[in-house]
Length: 308
Image (tube, rainbow, N blue to C red; front, side):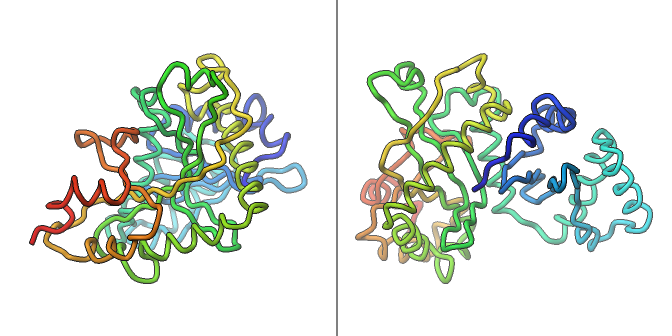
């Protein structure tokens, strides 16, 4: 399960890793994600730091393949390794991010970078509290048929809902991102995502275990202060369960209306229960008012989908 054990959590909250956690929370270009008792820190959608624990010792890692596009490998590699060994985060992150900037100038990862912007805006931007969705995980992969871009919690910014009154239960949603028209169809297209989603959640036991995993993960992120507007000092209403329904939402970015690809793919989704999200005045926030079912999406955004 993608959660941290008690030792890992304690070291992040008030132990050996507290300086690392605080640095990441102050630097909003970084994104802290929890894996199976390890941590991945992302920058521009790429992993800038990995943290694992073995026999009580923490290991910090950087992918030195990022040196492949123009950075002077020999000197910087030694400097970064020294920073990692000393947990010198003030020196490590600016240098490692510079290496990745050079790499991404030649090998861009636009979808991953856009994905991280979604996390930042909805989880810890200055206006995050108005969002109706909070990201609990990205790049989910259980190695058994479930690979999801974003997993979010729908918890509307309505006072009664945030207070969990009247037995209200937040809902889990799976968000699949499609950046540009090349990602819309084919082996990783929208129809394939619908099939994978339906197959995975058709098993009641699998669905129950997934909800339990996300419940614990959401609690840990809140405890670590990674969603500031939902921290215990601001909102101490504990989410112990989610709504039974789990929704699939597509987030389509930078589609060319002159291309028929999206229209063709949407036609294949006629019998699917997927929904679609749009931006609100060029922002990255996820609001309920911008969620549409297929018929609503086709009707309201006909010209943007395919301008004949």
